[in-house]
Length: 335
Image (cartoon, rainbow, N blue to C red; front, side, top):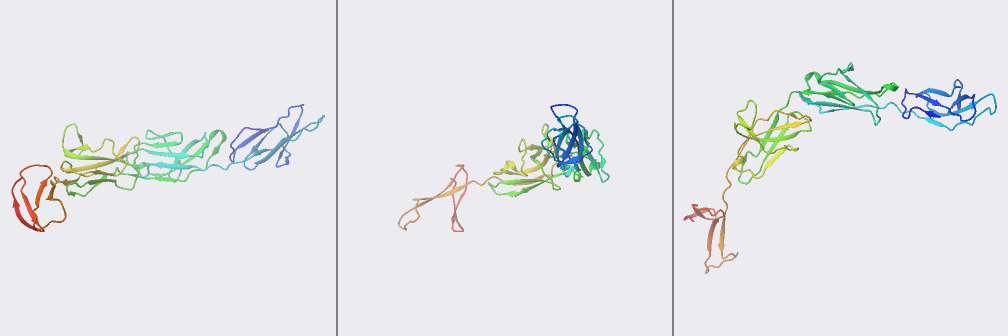
């Protein structure tokens, strides 16, 4: 026996053929689960699933000798339940102008053609310049408020009139283009301190890459932000996947304003730039050290010792003061 289908779903029809190599003039009888299907006598039989699944056998009979062929081996016809369909949306929520991709999945089988529905009426989505399909994906370009709503999808094998179970609905939300929010900590720095910039996106969402900039006076050739009176210089060429950026240590050249933005997707969708945030960092104080000679922990009243105050940069013009406990004892001369 031969079947014309391999993966069989409820609602499929299957054709079985009984081949007997010797003699002619056979009349065929078909058995399902060892019980005869009395109405079937031709060489082929067509069965409808799932009500006729089971073990099939066939046998030939005729009026002349030999009158019966051997009974064929059993052929098992099993039925797979209609597959479920899953729908994923990325990103969701989305923002006005962003590209949104819906992906429909029906198990691992191939050959499915997909239909997309929107809103409670399950109206078939109308394709347009902004709404396109490729295989199992439906793409919304330049998302608009009108794209909000419930979406479903369903797969179909048209040659067999088989449809998957329709997916659960997914609600797509389209918000206004977001603005990045920048915070700086700390804003006032001690010499040698580091400063951390943190960038976030209003409303909870994922998949962002963050870009960091220092503000400078408006300069031709540098990136300028519409409506702002300054230009910006990037702190890194490709941004960061993390939402924080640390300057270690932050020196006087870092004093000033900073902005950030975030981007995601392909093509990249950018947020508005953040409002500028500022921090201040002064010159590190020059380090000095006190030297005692001889260098030991115990000294005697009859022995002399010397104290010297040394400034590490070896610059000149410093006024030195000598302290005894918490009181200023006296001023020393310039070194």
